[in-house]
Image (tube, rainbow over the protein chains, first blue to last red):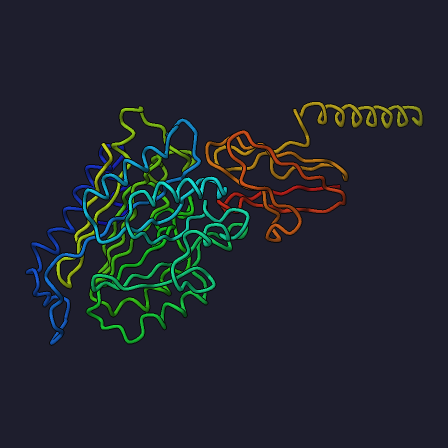
Length: 312
Length: 112
């Protein structure tokens, strides 16, 4: 489903969530229903041995904005804890945080976030959001949350559960009227990182700002993402997990599934439905229904099943 | 004829003076820039050399005020709601700036 179509279909928050639930179901059916479990012939795997059939699951949280204190959520610490409780209950192999850990890149905000997230005792991989790199190009962020063996620019990759994870960085180096880019160095690194990887290796790409054009007027776009996807097109399963826009928007393009995530702190308006993308205030008793986490479950070597759930 | 011309000139001069004062008094604070709905206003802002310009963030979203040279000339910290940032423009020139968190937000200070 194209994002533009969705925008025209959806003009209420409730409608959006309903639509998203439907979109999520679409993925499940595409994988579990459409592709016999453990026999991913549609992936063109040829003689590749089947991966273990046991599911590998992990959780995505995003946009915890620790330090935010405006009306849209006076207590983002509490909602982050709620999100982590939900995450732990799913017994995931690990967790990813797709950025905007803090609201203002302040040391005490990083410390609070670190303490709360460590409390979940989950192996956690992070990518930074633009709120995490204010004023120091991410120095404080990388000291605490930088990936193991990360390149000088902050990007890195790792393998877990038979999946190759690529954690990209698209929130540093903004200029006047110039927003998110990956940059030549990172795209070259990606090309080398993927070299020699079998096309049957499931790939998960992490980045804070969406890696496809959702709404450039609000900066919901990464200008040179297409160059990165040129290196990913030979893979049978590519899952792109982004944050930044505090709501679920999905696009499936060939073998690539793009999906943004809910925030654990506050919602933002759907593209173009407000004068600006600032925090959206909802009644206090509705807040948790627009915050959430995501479980990603890989069934054998197929595309994963993505399930979003709210905190309500 | 000569006298009429001189009177017309005087009138014009008086009008210019009045207009000038009027324009100055009309602007609430000619050295202030408001940040609201992800935009700087007014922009461009024209000030005299030596003016201290103050930005105020009226959004619930944090913003920065960062000179277009990547913050070499001036760079605010993250401005939370109601935070302010000031910079004194000593010399004449056209100074472009942006929000380093939301780079589509751009503004200009003209000093002359």
